[in-house]
Image (cartoon, rainbow, N blue to C red; front, side, top):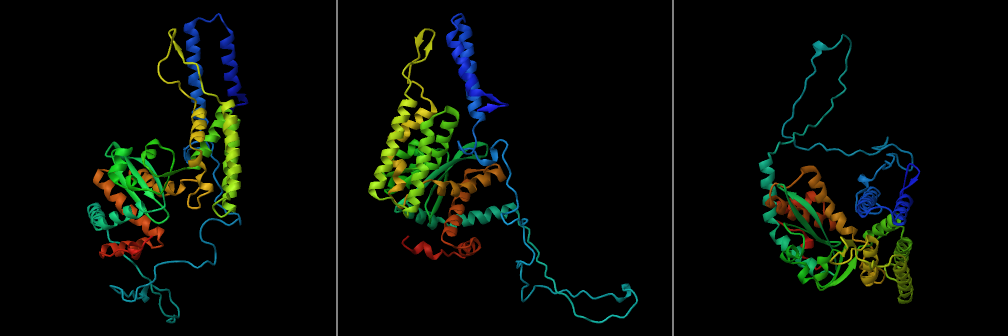
Length: 410
């Protein structure tokens, strides 16, 4: 990494080398210098994180280049001249008709002819109190009780399911929204816990026997189903390992995963066995190269003349290497199973609306509000996946009706 033409990594390496070679530095001063080098390294690693090598959103990227609002055809944003506009159509039987007569006294002198009149429609928006909105939401929550049970059963029986979780603020306290979803069904559920206690209470994962796609969070692995890992996360971590830790194997693995994904797409979602085996061999060769380039640390840290107790701390690059080695099948499952995608983007896209809610509202005032939001949001998301407009879905809901797809075996 360079800052104003200064190669920070080389400078830090040079400082460490000088510190090791200088035998005249007292132990206490040496310890101070080592701590400073660690702090500088940690700061620079964090400073160099962006949306391509971490989970940070693009909006947080330093010196982010804003895209031009003009498209590739050079047109300005918004409606173009001559396009067919959309607006509210006049109703056939308005509640009130007001005729505005022309006051001839205010007209300038001259001869005038009657050329007809213009008709305009005005729609008054009814103001609704926040209490009424809450009551509407709560009514929707109660009406969706049967939907809540149905969507859970649909996901339990599904061949593939995506899961994710995100933190929320409930009246100043931390909580979590858990997501389970696939191409047709969405289920949100809020809980004070993030791990297996919440997942068991939700009741989907303990009964699920299909392929579970997630971001390698450990609690997911306690459930006895097939697992597939999100390679979008892997690509970002590999990018970070290459940029910040100078791990060449990480760049090679990143290139290979992208190559496998492109080949899988060209093969309509599933590679022939012989080609898949070739890619597995390349995968293992890169892991072997990584073992040489990023070996495990053997020496324990010395503190006051004694070895520090506990496990030896591993670098982030080493942790990533070991995960990719141990979970090869889960990482590459997408190349042979046509139903398994390369990433867990479906879950991340579904859960994004909860982030929007938190950004706008700041928090939920109570867990009751979080429960209501999650159930209604689950219904709206599911209806959209089945091609049903939100307005139609809500009209049916408040009439006490459920969409037809609720009764189909899908």
